Amino acid sequence: MKTVPPRRRCLIALAAFFLSVAPALAEAFRVEDVPSVTAVSPDRVKVRTILVSDHADKIADGETGLMRFEDWARERPQQKRFLSLFPTYAEPRIKVSVHGIEKPYTEKLHMYVVETRFLIGKPADAVDLGRFVNLDVLEAIDPSIKHRRITADQAGPNRDPRSAHNRNPGRRWCEAAQSLCIESRYPLEGRLPVGIRLANKLEEGGKKISEFMEFQSEIRVLPQPEIDQAGLAKLTNFDAPVTGVLEQTLFDVNQVLQFGKLLAVLQPHPTDRAKTVATVFMALGIETDVLQQKQEFASVPVLRNLIPVQVLMGKSSFNTGNSISAGLPSYVRNRVRAIAEMLDG
Image (cartoon, rainbow, N blue to C red; front, side, top):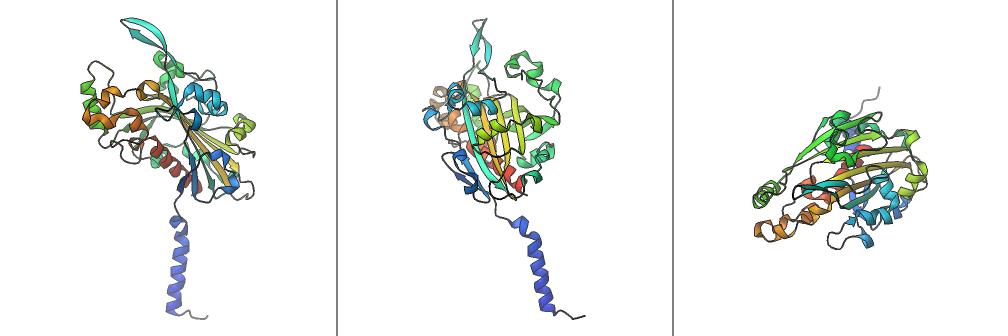
């Protein structure tokens, strides 16, 4: 047998090592903002790039930059159908107490909707969405949010008349086959808790702001019979078979939001069957009353940057970190990047 010189053996070993770690050294996904994600043809999406659009354009409320729920429902009916809690969802009718007398009241909402699109470097039938129906995977996406499993009887809208407006008319939450229902808790970070404590001291007798976000959601991979092929192709603006759908529905939130929906739609690449096109949407229904809390904060110098809409949109000096405390735009981008990395890994 021919002996390999020591120097050459060393070079071969180094080459083998670098080949073995090459996947781990792959370039991280980068984010590119575009006017409209669904207007970009999938064959024009670059590898390891996440296209993002969260601009409401002509239907945005000039004061908040967000869409009124009724404008969103009218102008973007396909989004409203798939990204609401359920297709027939409407702004909640609740009862409020006025001088001791309960009166019906419609809680107005504003919408923050994000569209994203990226490529996965594997065939559509090789992508495992089921891995996300797992507590450990969810905590890996955002370790600052802690989750615990809950049952259908613990889901707020199923048991509490005060959140009955968020009940699914087709079935009870958490009773869908192969679904995971969780309660999640996120303690606000950085300077936000200190600002909230001061704001609560100034707001005597009013509703207190919590120093944590707590929400319940249902996560599931849609069975093929439930996938609306034509409707989802219209939503993604890409005429190709839908091979998989992951859905996370936030149906109970302790403050600020009324509901939320994450929807990931997988379709085969139009020209390269070794790749998959992922279009991921996130919609958040924000309570309009929260956005209008401005004057009481603006009048206190230390709280001028705690105006809710500024904090939510990441435009406040109180924003910090990479999670919810960073503001919705940063939070959503970081979450989608983590999902993309897992799907492509």
